[in-house]
Amino acid sequence: MPPKGFKCKQCGNCCLNLSGAFETCATEEDVRLWNDEGRDDILEWVDPIPLGDQFIYDIWISPRTGDDVSRCPWLRKLPNQDRYICRIHDVKPVHCREYPRSRKHAEETGCRGFEN
Ligand code: SF4
Ligand code: SF4
Image (cartoon, rainbow, N blue to C red; front, side, top):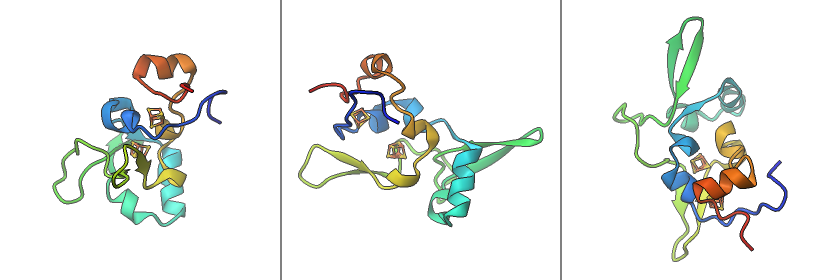
């Protein structure tokens, strides 16, 4: 659930500028969902790194080059508009779904979701 009073303005700031918005890792829950949904198109951008008896799911790693990408591959700017959409909105990673955690978090990170 988004914080009370929040409405995304689709400005794209979180996806374009915040490393926390996509440069971290997917969770077990994300990977399970993508497997269940048959989303190989997403899974091919995930690099599972074994760590002990678990994995760290590094994202987004280009399936073509094996390198980190500088911009989330699922972010699209709408033509002739200053608005962005997430092409995997319904199944985006937990850390994207949970952004921003609070009004304070939004204010500190340049999110306009609490502006009128
Ligand atoms: S997966 Fe979607 S919400 Fe997350 S950074 Fe990419 S475009 Fe933004
Ligand atoms: S920064 Fe806030 S208002 Fe802008 S796209 Fe991200 S969540 Fe939406």
